[in-house]
Image (cartoon, rainbow, N blue to C red; front, side, top):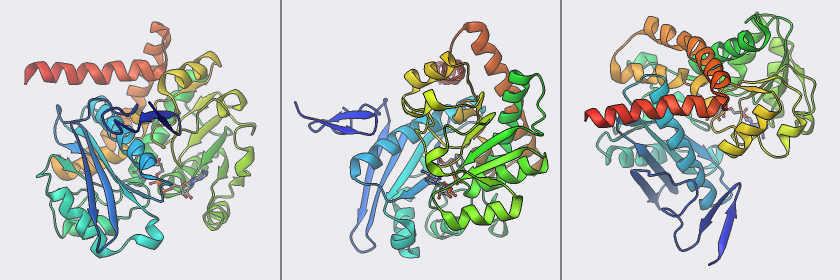
Length: 365
Ligand code: NAD
């Protein structure tokens, strides 16, 4: 049997979907294509026990289809546990569109994608993710109601990124409280990797608290803009993990915690927005634990965005969005303490709570 290796995963060419190592009892994997607009997308619906699957659409220049499939399988699964641990009545789903958004994205392509979302009749609700903007959600809204994160002036909850950043900030503070005995971040050396929608807002919050903020990004223009706005210090992309720092905040793409980076990492805390930060959940969660690095699970602390977009479905307002997002502080602290008392990794402790909620609901259904 021949095997194709795809960034930390294996799959078989004979069974590329159900046999994929990132396939985990997903309910639906929908492949969508449209020749006229050049659309090639995959929608992953992982689990709908708690409610309709909700998760953003990522548009990215994947090197190949296998990479895109791997991403949608991992991201949609992560959304299931994110909703579960955040006490939302939502399932987990995600979509990926293959292609560079700067070159391929057009309103027609967005509308065509929206029609595919609509064809799932509300099993899946989409929202923003990497490569997407609030106006793209407005365009999708023209053809389907199953989209969140639309503009405030169109009755939506708007861009979820500031709320995501606020939740990450709450989770980071909880991890600081657990590690240093105080949640004050003043004077702490914090490296934010990726200063996009979420990363830049996190830099703003940290700067307001007089943390020493270090930044890295592959987009030089963005890097210089954020440096000038917040007097943050730029770190060369090749020097990130050996940088002397207290807290590492991954806010770009996933899998930056891996065999190469963890042994070099000087931080005592990892707390960031990126989804799927651990290249291998079990292996790299344990590696961090063994090195005494406190890891605030990504799917727990980056839930601000889903809390924000869920407001459009569940019908709550800004006050409740803030209150639910601030609650990430308490949940994170509880999980870090539970992991220590159970002598397990923080990821395992968080996953156990999320899975228990899904099992309980399944038994009630
Ligand atoms: P974004 O596209 O606005 O920003 C990502 C930034 O990372 C960009 O500036 C990009 O240039 C940079 N980047 C890409 N590769 C990099 C690399 N190798 N090294 C350094 N920088 C790199 O995306 P975003 O909306 O800010 O989301 C950031 C992360 O947070 C993503 O993993 C996303 O899935 C996750 N997330 C976002 C939200 C949200 O509300 N936007 C919610 C939950 C999770």
